[in-house]
Image (cartoon, rainbow, N blue to C red):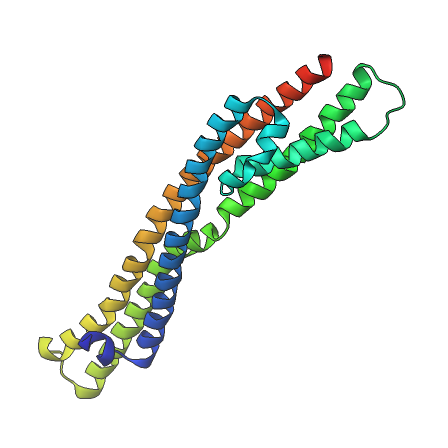
Amino acid sequence: MELILGAGPVVKLVLLVLAYFSIVSWAIIFLKFRIVRRAIIDSDRFLDFFWAKKRFDLIGQGLKDFSQSPLTVLFREGYQELLRGSRQPSEGGGPSAELGRSANVARALRRATTSETQRLEKYLTFLATTGSTAPFIGLFGTVWGIMDSFHGIGKTGSASLAVVAPGISEALIATAIGLVAAIPAVMAYNHFVNKVNVLTGEMDNFCQEFLNIVQRMGRD
């Protein structure tokens, strides 16, 4: 604390910026941990529920129990598009009509997948920004603090360790805090990107399974 309070105004400003990055990063980490964890748990539970019920109408009635799963959004959008297609009168049936219905459902699933992926990835760019820029911001504060120290040496005319050490140690605290802000952000970013990729893969697989079921329904 003495090092921070004894630093110059520019270094203090750098430390405030780094503190902002660190606080916001930790808030995002806790938020995304809760969201991603619930998404994974609810997705696993929903898949078990989906294959156990085997009827779209029954599955649609139980979606509220898996509200954090992105798969429920995909099912809801695909099922609603399927219902809209079945209610609309078609000018002739046959393979072409079924193909058009499947294409509409596929578009609805793609839109829902994109929307849910963006929701899961929200705020992760801030973690990436913190991880890549915080060390350099801290380094800037350190360089500026060392410049002040050498400026003080020029004024006093003394280059003894007792004169130089306090200023340099105050400057180096900026680099240390920059690393403290960056390291958790980088680790959390890599962790969440991996989890989001897993969920995205599950969404792609679910879309394919849903479309296969729709096509089989059309043939039956």
